[in-house]
Structures are given as structure tokens and as C-alpha cells.
Length: 610
Image (cartoon, helix red, strand yellow):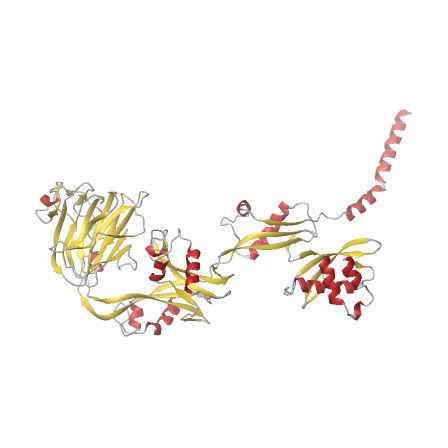
């Protein structure tokens, strides 16, 4: 009997479980549960960008942000549901104000202008030819881009010279090291300091494609020595430009002095090349045209590394240039490492090597002297070259309506402008360019404020300037747009801080421009004032609306929509098509109630957004 009773109880239990009427009630309750609604403002952090795989700390487009942020917000606000909103602050890369492309004319361009010279003739008008040359050589130009045409123009007559090597010394002085003046048999002679200090070595230096590379021996100079030596070139030179080159490997440098130079028979020195420490274990090279005060470059070179050094001196105008290369170059680089101007008219009859306090300890090899760059670089018989006084120039064009034109609202900084910004170390006038250590926008903003003292808000100008890139070891042309904002010239920012609003649609986060707004007392007063005298609202008390700060049960849905629309136009008169609002307001109906209305601007008017 007990066994049957247990079965009965179990059976009844199964019956009650299967027929529990509370299941339907629970299901109905679950269906009526309202989602958790939240509103937040959040700005992405460095860690957030890393988590999103954005190592540069910004989005490259708004579309990328719209794609990436929904899943991010889901992780951040996992329990929030429909009706929630988050205003996300983030960094957006919008790019440079404009693109600048450089083009350096070549011989084919000059030939097209009617010049057989590597430059426009003195009577040519470059602007006649440059737009077409830029169009043929700069691809993918966009509206507003800038093109910089770099070219030469002769200032007078040109002439032809035959490339000639006046001196080549590879230090082929035998298998025994010793002092240079002795082992060279008088080819090198002392002209200053203590005798027999500058030493000859049987090892050599090498450089790719340099004709005087890895031949015979070399010479060693020492900062502790004082002997200075020289050797003659094949014939004195009294006009034109002369070049001198050597391979050099420095093991130590001091505070700086010259060690390699041209000289005449009266100890008149020119193109004095020197080296000094950069203060961080590297080397700076410099040149003085005729003075021992050198102009140093900004590139830091390494010790215990072989470099190819080329210097030049223009006898006619006193300009000396210095180039430091890592391999032979068939054409003279456009920008020297350092340049200096001194006395003109120094004849060239010898090449000198100097030792002295502050100078380097180094190995020199493969010394050459020639009247052209090409002759420095080759032992071949070379064709004649056209030589003349020519000026390096740049012309700025902007791409407008599919063609390159001379712009109007653009300013290119001049040497005088850089100097006006300061000529001390670390200032733009030091080398007539900016670099990464300088606050470029601050300098240019101040400069424009002085140059255009009466500029008004929203005045704008594009500025083109020189920038030294330490990574490229070269001076580049760059630029930016500047606009007067609150009386200050302000530069265009390539990355801006902006916001993007997201709303939860019940399933996920979607970009949403909805603005949530709660009416305050002044808003009710404004609506009352705007509707006073409107016959469509004769059935409601506008006085009560203004006095009590709430609507009442007499207001119809259409009247409420119209009133809220008036307020929306008031608080955002330039709202774009598709702008959304959720207004929270008070309604008196058997007590004071809080209500919301969602509207959207459609066809220029505010309608319900259900």
C-alpha cells in the first residue's frame, strides 16, 4: 500500500508541474520588462585606440569610426538597450590642408624652351613653359594642390668647358708607412707646423663608383699634430668653379676647425672644409669660403664610417659648397650639406691638408681636383659642359579647374622671413628652414600677425615653407593653410577632435544624431509668446503655459508637435535635414507627468519620429 501511495504523489507532482499556470504569467511579465536606458559622454583613450588596432591614435575617416565603435560600445555598456545614447569623442585624421609636389626641370624641359643649356636662357620667361611641364610630370593632382617648379635660369652668357682633372692622388707611395713628405718624395710639402707628423699608411679607403677608390695607400691626420702640407695641381686656375674631393673616415672629432682646402701660392685659402662633434657622438661637417669661420650642416654623420666629401669654390663670386655622400653621384646634388660665401678672386694652385687643435683624427684617401662635378666622378673622356652664371629658382603653382595656375592667396617664406624669426641655434633663420624641433605653427602665426596686422576673422592664406627632414637628410617643401580665428592666425590641423553620437536601436548601437533636450521654464515662456494670437491655440491657456511651466490635458497631439517644433527651430535654427530630437516636457493631467516626444526634420519641417 505504501508503494502505491508514493507513485500517486509522484504522479500528482508531474501533473502539477506540467500544468503550472504561472508560466504564462512569467512570460507576459518578461515581455513587458523595459530595457535599461542610459546616456553617456565618453572620450576614447590611448588604450582604447590600441584595443581598436589604431596605433596612430586616430580614425582615418568618420565611416571607419561608425564601423568600429558599435562593437566597442556593446562591450562597454553591455546592459544598456533601446533608447540609450552615447556621445563618443575621438580623434579624426582629416589630412593636410593641401598636397605639395616638387618637380625639378631636366634637360628635355629646357630644350623644349629653346635652350641647349641646363637652364632657361636669360631672356626666357619661365612662366610661359612651367604650367605645361608640371602638367606632364605631376600625376593625380587634386583641386587646390600646389606644384613647385624648381629650375635654373642663366643670368648672362654661358660658355663651354672641357671636364679636366687637375690632380689625382691615390697615395701610391710604396709598401712602407712613414711621414708623408718623405715617402712622397716631395710631392707633398710642409708649409706650416712641426715636420714629419702627417703620416702615410699602406691601407686604403673605398667608396662605390668613385674612381679613386681602394687604390694604394692613404694618409692619416691627427688632432694632436700641427704639420700642414700641400701639393700642386696641374695649372693655376683664376676663374670659374673648381671642385675637390676625398674619401674620409673619422675616428675622433673636437670642437671644430678646418682640415682640407684649396690654396694659392701666397697662402690664400678657399673652400676650407672642417668637422666638429655634434655633442651626441656624431659628426657635423662645415665649410668656409675663404674664412676660417665655418658654416656647419645639420646632418649628424657617424664616426668610423667612410664618406665621400666634395667641396667647391666659385672664384668669380666667392661661394663655397660642401657635399657629403655615401656613394658617387653622377650629378651635383641640388642642396649642399653646407654653403658659405667669402671673398671672390682667390686663385687655386694647390690643395692643402691641415692638422690642428679642435680638428679631427681621420684617414683621407683618393684626393681629386677638377673643374667640373663630372670629372670628379669619372676618369673617362667626357664631353664639354656648358657653364654660366645661373640662379636656382622656384615657382609656386596651384591646381585649379584642371590646370596649373599662379595662385593669389599663397605666400612663400623668404630668407629674410626666416631671419626675422630668429637666427640663433634652434631658430628658423639659422638655416632658413624649419625642422621637427620647432613649433612651426607658432612661428608662422606670429609672423603673419606682424605681416598682416589688419587681417580680419576668416581671412585665410596658404603658406609654403622649407622643412629639413632628419630622416630623409634633405630639405623639403611643405606648407599649411592659416585662417584668422578670434584675431589669431591659426594653422590647419591634420588631426582634429570631434564627436559621433550613437543610439541603441534595441539590437545594436547605430550612429545617431539624436539630441536629447529637457524643457526649462524659459522654453515654456518662449512657446507661449510665439503662439499668442494664434487662433489654432484659442482652446488652451497660453498664460498658464508660461506661468506654470507645463502643458495641460487640453493640448492635442498636433498642437504639442507644433509647439515643440517652434522650440526646435529656436534652439537650432540651422538644423540639417534628418536632425533628430527627443524633447522631455511636463504635462498636467490628473497630476504632473513627464512625457517625451521624438521628432525629426523632414522636408524642412519637424515631424514625429516614431
